[in-house]
Each structure stands twice: as C-alpha cells, then as structure tokens.
Length: 184
Image (tube, rainbow, N blue to C red):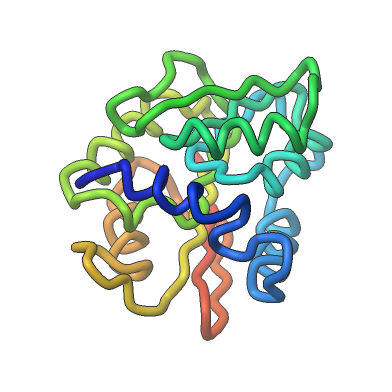
C-alpha cells in the first residue's frame, strides 16, 4: 500500500479527518479513555497518532508515551499539540515494519489497522504480542463503516486480533465503531 496517501491528506489541511470538530471522534476518544483498565500506565505506544488528540490525553495517564505516524506532517502536528512534554516521544514510523523494541503495558490501535494488508496486520499483532508486558492492555478501536480501497474493515481487523495470545477484557460496540481491550 502506498503510505504517501497520508502525506497527501495532510497536505490538504491540518485536520483531514475532522478530529477536532467531529462528534464521532470526540465520543470515540472518550470511550477509549474510559475503557482503559488502569488509572496509570508505565509505558504506552500509540502508532498512527495523526494530529495527537488522543496522544495528549494518554500523556496524562502514562509515565511514558511513544506516539508515531507514517506521515511526518502528522508527527509535526502532534508535536505542536503536546509541546515539549518530556515523557512523550514522537517519531515517524511505519508499523509494523518499524515496530519499536521497547516494552509497553499499553498499546492503542485507533483507526489504524484496516489500512494494513492482512499479512501486515498479522505482523503487527505478533509485534504487539512480543512487546506487550504481561498484564498489559492492547486497545483496538475501529470504525465499522466501509473502508473503500482497503482489504480489511473494522470488524475483520478485530476478528484477526482476537486470534492473538491475549484475552478480551472489554468489548464495546456502537453503530459506528467497535472497541475491544485485550489483556496479555
């Protein structure tokens, strides 16, 4: 898949998905944060951070956050949002290929995994399993509408993630999105 599509989206504007104005996005972030099983996490990873709205909120619940995006513009916008917060590290990375070596007790996959090919999603799940600490949480939240031009949709993503070496501890479905938390 051509990842430059994300660069082109950010060339059209700083908020291509309406993260700051969409009631759907606000609701999804609120439910995501409410689904977190711990009040505080030691180390979180958020691939596909986009403009960093969720990153900013995760920073208040985590001792360390690594957030990344495939788009340098998205990472720059996240940096503008979170500033020089010492415990937030921002990087340009393409997952699963550039998965970090760190260990995490929280990994958040928000509206990311259906942009991957099925084998890439399987690689992502393996990488997440290898870096998620015992007792750690993998949060997956994805839109349930059609994803034109991509091989997976939100439900297919979650069906594949369920095969991982974790157990589901939270399941929340609304007409527009599915959120699940899996515990290692």
